[in-house]
Amino acid sequence: MIVLVLFYTQGVPYDKGRNLTCECSRMINQYSSEFDKIVCYNPSTLREMGYGEYVSESDSTGVVSKNPNFNNIGFAAWKPLIIKLQLDKMTNPDDIVVYHDVNCSKYPIYLKYNGFRRHVLNLLDMAKYPFFVPQVPEYRIKKICKTNVIVELGENHPFSYMCKNVCVNFMIFRKSNISDEILEEWRVACLHKEWMDGIVYIKNVDGFSHHCPEQGVFSTILANWIRKGTNNIPKSFPSVYFVKRDINKQRLITDYSYLKYVMSNHAVGAVMLLLRSCCCCGHAVVAVMLLLRSCCWCGRCFTWIFIESVGDSIPRYTAFICPFILCACSIGSIKRTY
Image (cartoon, rainbow, N blue to C red):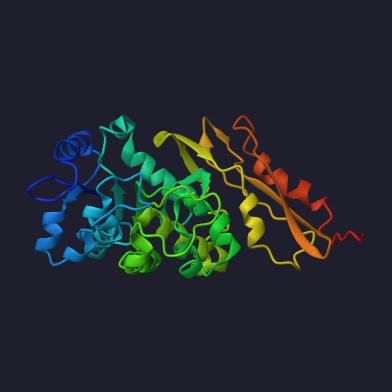
């Protein structure tokens, strides 16, 4: 079973958000045939269910400047809650919960997904993990997340600043302990007032633009998982982004330079091959190859990352040839002395 979860505000007198009732209805009408069930929440229903703290009102937006009225609906603390509420109802290991934003007036592309259900299954398969969220390759976490969140939740680690941001307007979770764990961690973190509101508690670092509360918090948690290898999450996760939020325009990540902040200083001359294949017109796509290389310079270890993407015209047997080619490379230590 695949369930689509939506959230919408109704506007005055029900709440102080923008009235997105029509947008929610349009999403339902567009995709009702793609999913086994569509579940909708709004601030009123959450308050009736006893979850009023997730849609609480605050006096000002502060640095949450790109999301008007977020201060009146709990700074989107409700997002992990409603996903988890639905996932907790699922019993089959193959059950899937999909969350998507509803503001299709602001983003008309939300109504133009071709084969939405098929994309959901393909993206989970590509992720090779129980959940999927697309990356935002042009933004590092420090740009859209308050510095106090990175210092406290992200343990002030360089990787938490420099890791790429992910976009939580669209998320997929398969029923699993791993999905439950990250959703629960995210839910609890979103109840931390100082991490969600628009108040600046410590000076934000250079490059900070604005705070995306629930997105910044999730991106920081995900960076922690990647850095620590929590639940064997791939270092390359997530490997996909969408062009202008268009799920029809999926692209593979080609810039993994941020991984240098989690490489060990003792990993000298390491070679790492990541091959992802998918069937396309009878051919395989050899998606990502990372050559990780480090050298000592001025007493400090730097990691150089080289990414090569092989076109989809390469025959399937290329996936078997590549490892033999890499075997010809030296995997010994390489150290420069100056």
